[in-house]
Length: 128
Image 1 (spheres, rainbow, N blue to C red):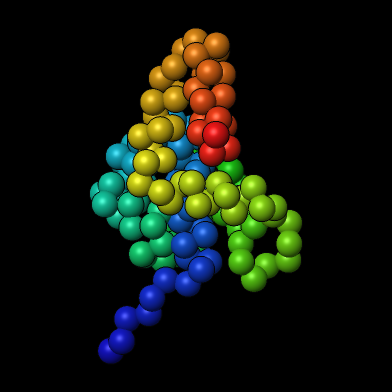
Image 2: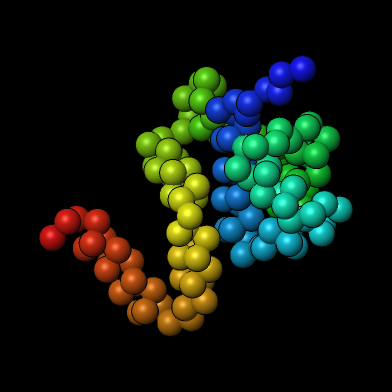
C-alpha cells in the first residue's frame, strides 16, 4: 500500500500550529504534554509530515486558544483572505533558524534592544 504524501494544506496547517505555538512562547514539549502526545508527534504535525485529524485539530485549537478557522487562514486553494506577508511568515517559520531567532528575540526584555535587532535585520536584508 502506497503512503500518501502530505498536501499543501497539511503543510499549511502545520505551519499555522507552529506559528501560534511560538506566538504564545510555548515549547513543542508543552504542547505535546497538553495533547497527550510526544514532542516528536507535534514536530511531525508542524512540518506537515503527519496529517492532523479533525478531532486533534479541535484539541490543538483549544490548547492554543484559537478558533479552528485560524489554521485555514491563507491556505492554498481556499478563497483569498491571506496576504503575501502570510506567505513570508510561513516561509520564515519553516526555516531552521526561525525557532532560535524567535526564542532569543522574546528573551530580550529591553524595548530598545528589540528595536535595534529589528533595525539590524532590516539593514542586512536590504543588501547594503
